[in-house]
Length: 266
Image (cartoon, rainbow, N blue to C red):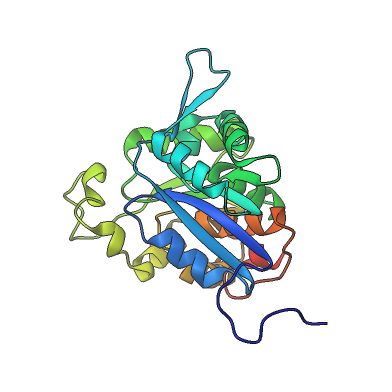
């Protein structure tokens, strides 16, 4: 018997997923909305804190959740969510190895034991491993500063997935003279173009890479994942695609999603 409503109202009758996202970003909700299968609803809480969104305590045995994160978690706790993701690549990589698990445990204390909790770091690690990728070509947004680029390389290396190469995307002539930290504030986050991104990844991907990881949940890219896989003959994983895939699996939803890379068909 088909229990799906005849008229779609975007109600999460199969799963409701909570997502913490950067306060000023539009990309995560747009990409998740494009990819999410029927019967799955996505609910965003916005965070304005700097990375990481939970700060290590001095002894590194626990973290202190940012005020926005704690507020959103308390609100999510009332919504009968199946899964919640801390959708911020920078927090995971700056937090470093072990941060994801400790932060998830802290959120679990607020959200309750029945909610599956993950982070974008855990999602991308799981997605790369499920895709058989061991030496990813790591593609980073143009607004990642040098220290975050180094943290990202260290993060994946520490988890046994040392990048074959790293490419911080050239934002284009209009933006090239601005430092990375100024790009989003001047509007690049809302003026991203995926055609130049596609061209850069195709041109820069080295033969030694057995897959591609496009990191950064504010990085618009899911529209080119399928084309990149077809042209480069390798798996392509993106931050939002990986988090959606992982949250669907944690929620028990296994519906294949066409058009956005092989990961969502696993």
